[in-house]
Each structure stands twice: as C-alpha cells, then as structure tokens.
Image (cartoon, rainbow, N blue to C red; front, top):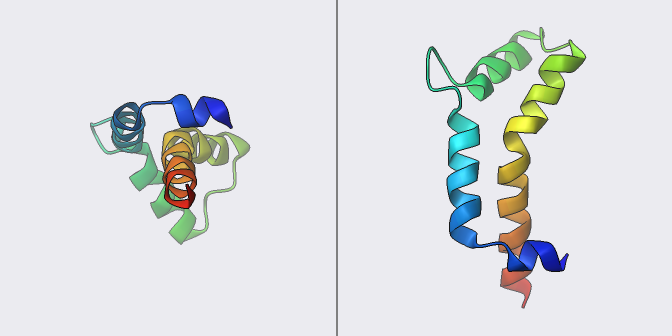
Length: 71
C-alpha cells in the first residue's frame, strides 16, 4: 500500500469532495442514489456501480487516514 502512502492528502480530499458532489446540478449522484436506496429502488447494477464509483476517493481517503494514524 505504498502507493496510498505516497498519495498527497490534499489530492485525496479534493477528489473525495468533487466526486461526492458530482454532478453539481440538478443534484449530486450520491444524493440521488441514497434516496433510491432509502426507497428500495437501488436495484440496477449500473446504479450500484455508480455509488461505488463516486465513493472510491472517499474510501481511499479513509484508508489513508487509518494508515497514517497507525504509524
């Protein structure tokens, strides 16, 4: 996981925020997908993939924070 340790924290923060809020209009995909999840309509594989796609930078940021706090 050396590649994650070498990744700048600022870059991960910016990527996580931008991917979580993209697209900015009419509403972020994550908001739409979480509404679908709450309603029980998040069933299409493409929609589920989209949730994970938009959360990848957040997962990486959390992993980096855990790795740096353990050092």
